[in-house]
Length: 485
Image (cartoon, rainbow, N blue to C red; front, top):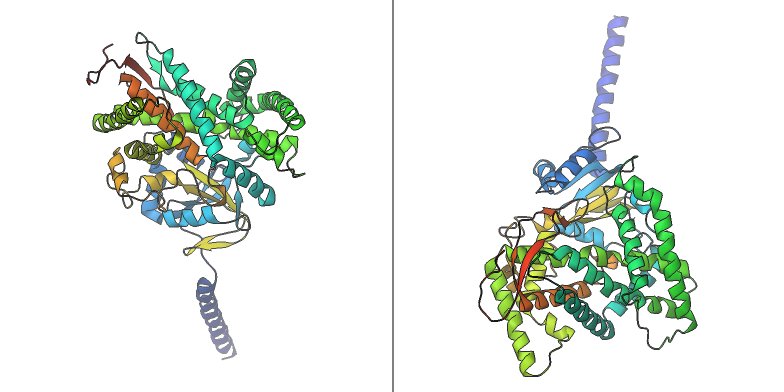
C-alpha cells in the first residue's frame, strides 16, 4: 500500500507540475513578445549564401518572396553574420526609418564600416549626426545651390555631349558618372575640372570599388584587396581635401558659403574638425559616383524599352525648349526642369523599378515592438525597399515600366521610399531629381538613339552589365526616325 500510495502521490505531483508549467508557458506567451517567424539557416553562415545567390539573379527579391509566402512580410533570418529581422512591410519599414537613435542606430557589415571614415555621417548618431545632416540638408534645399548645380550640370552635360560621335557607341553609364561626379565635387568643395579633379576621381573610384563590393572579406576577394589598399587611397583623398579646407579656413566668408565644405566650416562647432569634415566630404561623393549616374542610366534604359513613354517625354521637353527659344531664354533654370510633370513621373518610376538603394540596415538599441513584431536588442533590421516597391498589393503590374501610374498617385506614401526616410532621409533627393531632369532634357532634345542589348545587375550595386551602349544621331528635324548602325 505504501508503495502504491507513494506512486500515486508522485504521479499527482508530476501532473500538477506539468499543468503548472503549461499554464506558466501559456501566460508568458501573452506577456512576452515572440520573434517573427523564420529561420536562422546554417550555423555561422546563416542564409547569406542563399541571399547572395538570389541577389545576383534577375529577380533579387525572390529571397524575400519565398519567405514572405511562408512567414509573412516581416520575418527573421541570419545574413552577413548577424541575426536579422527583415521587413518587406511598408508600414513597419516606415516606422523603423522614422525612429531615432534611442531605438535604432546604423548597422552595416563590419567589413564595409572599415572602409568608411570613423566620423562618417552614415555611421554616427546623436547630436553630431543631426548637426551635419541638418546643415547639409538646409544647404541642399537652398535656391543658391540649386541655381549653381543647374548651371554646372548644363555646362558639363553640353561639354560631354559635344564630344559624342555618331560613328561609335556612347556608353551612357560612363558619361553619366563623369558628369555627375564633377557636378557633385564642385558642390562639395568648389573644385573645378583639372589635375586635382582627375586625381580625386581616380582615388575615389578605387576606394568605392571596395565599398560597393560583396561584403565578404576573404583573401582574394575584391573587398580583401580594397581593405589592403583603402587606407592609402583614403589618405591621399583626405590630404587633398585637408589642403582645400585649410585654404577655405583662411579666406572663409561666412555670410555667403559657396559649397558644403564652407557650410560645415562656418558652423564653428568644435565637433566639426577638419578630419570630421573630410570624412563626410568623401562619403558625400558616393552619389556622384554611384546613385545619381545609375538613376540617369536606368531612365535611358527604361525609355529605350518603352517608345510610348519616350515619345511623350521627348514632346514635353521639345515643347519647353521651343518656348524658351521664342522667349530668347536658351538657359533653363531649375524651376523649368522640375516643372515638367511627365519627366518627373519617369524619374519617379525609374526610382521605383530600379531600386538603386535596395534597403537600409539598422540595429536595435533596445527591445522594440512594431505592429506586433518583436525586435530584440542587438538584432539587425533590414528594411528591404525593393520588395515594397515591387509589391503587387501596392502597385498594379509592378514589373511594368509605367510612369503614367504617378499622374494621380502620391509620391509621399509609405510604400515609396527610394531615398530612405526619417532623420536620415537623403538630403540630396531634390538635387538627384534635378540632375536627372537636366540630363534627360538635353539628351532627348539633342539626340535620337538606338540602344544595344544590355541588362541590369542588381548586386552588390545596381548597374548596367555593358554600361548601356547607345548609338546616337543628332536631331536636325522633328521626325521620329531611329539611327541606323
